[in-house]
Length: 209
Image (cartoon, rainbow, N blue to C red; front, side, top):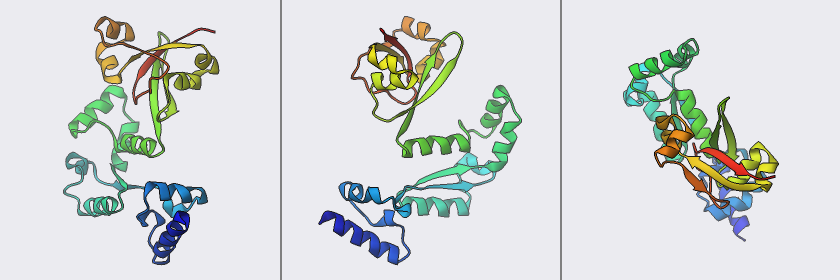
């Protein structure tokens, strides 16, 4: 009965040329029709391509960007500002020059980085890091994964022999410079098998095989 009501609500909207995601379904009702794979039920991201200067006030002075932002808010969708011109310029710069360029506009990250971050969130994905003497690497996991499950993304043996996860937040890691330095400052945590990995965690897995 609930599924029928959900389908009728969707049908009414689609007949009017309105996306199915605007049918006003409760979460449990939406789950019932999720298997249908309706294209207009999928979440969307509205991205406005703006001039570099528009990024300084988050598009507040750009009427077109504001109109698109309003539409996104009405649909409870995500909205991102991107400057294709800026992205083109950044490709030609090295790390230090890139940061100086961004600082000149008073922004912390590029529109492309914002777009990737929003897309990750919408897909229910998270990123954690491992860092050793030779390399620092990012790993993609599903939101809600525990430490042993996240370790399994590297190798299944890590899950089987999991002992603990020595963890520090990304910002604390960058400020400290290394996990050892973070440990000396008391910022390193020893997490067990029930720990849910957070976005940006830097982890050293201890395991036994």
